Image (cartoon, rainbow, N blue to C red; front, side):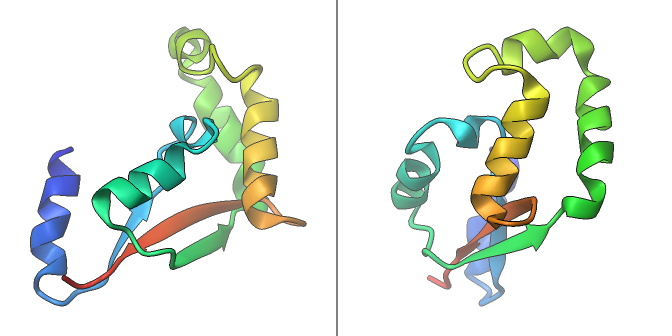
Length: 104
């Protein structure tokens, strides 16, 4: 929340600001679009290929074993959820999406 607040100040200096989708919260149907509209993000997005690092990402997430049941409780088994969402962003590749905040 602090970083998001600071982004307004950064954007006001005519610098491009990108926001990382907060996963797994972004996996909730319509959550990303609602938040983007709420805070005035443009529809300009950048998808970054994470195919070469997906297995390392899953291993890193697994290190938070005590939090997995809580974080993914509404989504299912985390490995499948992460892979499906990354494919939904990247199509044939695993990807993560960043949203651009336009200048004020």
